[in-house]
Image (cartoon, rainbow, N blue to C red; front, side, top):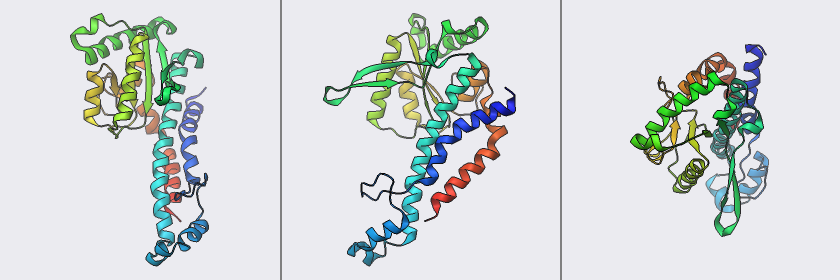
Length: 267
């Protein structure tokens, strides 16, 4: 596969989920799965005496709701696109199959219901060729020191398991508790739990807490340390320059994102 074809393949994996957001319509609490069109919105709000008196059946109000909910959807789909891109690059760069990258665990939800948490990718050292394995072993040694300090020598890991997100601004305790559960289960399976954040948008207190709980956090910062930067990890450890991929494709990606956002801003 040429670099042009590879870029096109990776770019499509990244953008395909985000394109769905262009068709977003706000629900307005009506329980309609696909949301309300502008005409349906004006019927609902125009038929509400209070809202009609206030002029809230105005198309500009619809556009504001559409933009707010649509942008939330963009970020959510951006996370899905990031997961798909991550898996594709890992698979192609390290010659791993979908089966080799699979890892999940079972847990008990509220109400005693069982749930399954499937992580975004797993890299086991035994699945790597000797040269690649050496890079990962060296990286793991440094990563363990970062999250475990002096006790790192006593930690045995056979691989890494990843949770990929586009950003992590929330400090929601429920999300953090679920992440901590993931970390514990990963260590029980002799795997290092790693959060890969594509952007630099993550709460510093959350990063500090996760690292102190033994979980590695990579973020999209400009840094040469592959135990800190998502892009340094890809370049130095995985062997794929992710920063160059986005630099090469930024105008095509920006153009598509711009069209989606402009559509969301219109009634």
